[in-house]
Structure formats: structure tokens, C-alpha cells
Image 1 (cartoon, rainbow, N blue to C red):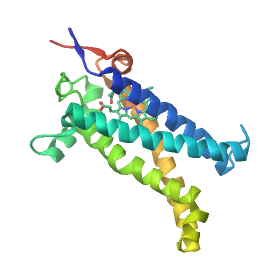
Image 2: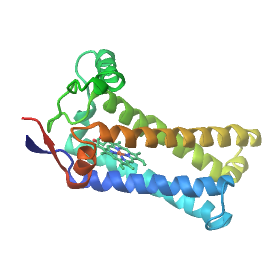
Image 3: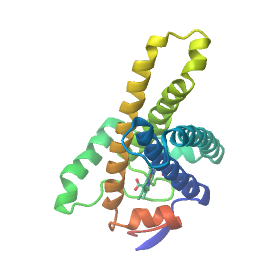
Length: 201
Ligand code: HEM
């Protein structure tokens, strides 16, 4: 076995901040939705908006970091992407239960498998931005109507925002399960905390 450095300090900071903000958004969002009473509707409503601004700012900061450091290259896949995604999906559905080796080996310049690449890319470039845009449209709805938006749009905006929130809950559950499928059940999480991971030579 040898140790490799996979996650720079900023990345670990960004990842855990993002997780903290998303959990806070889920809790305050569910309270605004009326599922329970923790801090009171008014407070939950304002805290939810504050965390949304925090998340949007962090995403922009992370974009800046990934682009200026060149680390975004970790997300590009050479060759047939679909074929590679299928290989990885087959491993998670079948190979992993037969103790087969991981189809893609991890190293410093390629830490994510093709399925992780496409999932995280869709999440960061499509899912989260859409969720933030619909959330802001909902929060600032009165201002938008005053500026000329059709008031009838409130319902689809609310439904899409809630639908995407439940999709995000689905992602988090899958994501946490998937992080246990590394070399040992905790090796990926350790790497996201310390930056270092043990891999086969
Ligand atoms: C709550 C929202 C979360 C989001 C949006 C999120 C998003 C991400 C993203 C985008 C990456 C890829 C980072 C990169 O390599 O460039 C990642 C990796 C990772 N995340 Fe999360 N994460 C969340 C929560 C969590 C939680 C709660 C845990 C563990 C308890 C976790 C554990 C990990 C680990 C171990 C990795 C390393 C790579 C892997 O195994 O896929 N994450 N996460």
C-alpha cells in the first residue's frame, strides 16, 4: 500500500462547508414547508435565505478555485464516457458483491471514477444552480411580480423547488452510501478529512 494526497485543504474545507450549508438548508427548508417547529417559521425563512446566499457564494468561489488551479481537469473523461460509466455502474451493481477489483484505479491525477465525475458535474453545474435560481425566485416572488412576472408562476416554482430538494436528499443518501465503497468502508471519508488515502501500489 502507498499513501497519496487527493484533497487539497481548500477542497476539504469547501466540501464540508457545502455539506454543512446543505444540511442547514434542508432543516430550515423542511421547517418552512411545515414539517416541524424548531426555530419558528419567520426565523427559518430568513436563515434559509441567508444560507442560500452562502451556498451561491461558495459555489462561485469553488468554480474560481477549480478553474485557476486546473483541478477541473479531474472532471474530464477521455474516450467513451458512456462505456466507462456502464463499467462503473456494473461494478457497483454486481462486481462489488463478488469482490472484484475496482475498474478504475485512483491516483493523484485521476481520483474520481467516471460515474462520480458525471454525478458531481451534473450536481454542481445543473442541480444546485437550478435549485438556487428557483429558490430565489420563490423568496423574492413579490419583487418579481412587481417587476412584471405572472403571479400564476408561484405554484410551478414552489413545486420544482420542493422536488429538487427531495432529489438532493436522495443524492445525499446515495452519496454517503457510495463513500463507503472504497478500499475500506471509511477510507474515502478519511481522505476527505485528512487529504490522504491509502491505495494499492
Ligand atoms: C450534503 C451535501 C454534499 C454534497 C453536495 C457533496 C458533494 C461532493 C462532491 C461534489 C464531491 C467531489 C469532490 C471532488 O473530488 O472534486 C464529494 C466527494 C466526497 N464526499 Fe461529499 N457531498 C456532500 C455530503 C457529504 C457527506 C455528508 C459525506 C460523508 C459523511 C461526504 C463524503 C464525501 C467523500 C468521502 C468524498 C470523496 C469522493 C467520493 O468518495 O465520492 N459528502 N462530495
